[in-house]
Image 1 (cartoon, rainbow, N blue to C red):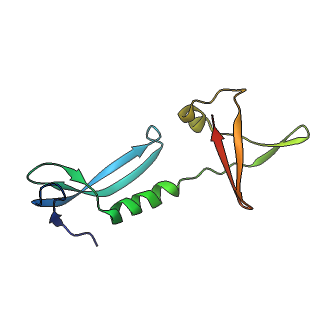
Image 2: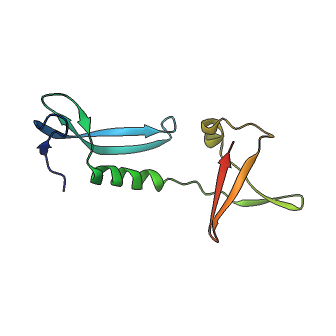
Image 3: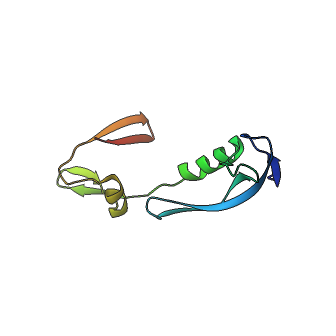
Length: 110
């Protein structure tokens, strides 16, 4: 459970627990009620390492499932329109496929 008040890491005065909704990918990914602290005196906002780890866990859990399809004699995976727009991809551009493990394939856009 989060502590309602802690010392500010900037000025050592009292910082209060607050919550905010964070939108990523132009609002396509929404993380609701993300905790952070705001100092009553200096007004600076900060998160604890525990809060950041929890937020990172939520961000990293975002994924998109796509079926493998057949195109001629090859197999292909389509990229959803939202990700095409976010990464500003264009037809004909190259990607790099990097095997990470037997069950992990990284795609790098350049």
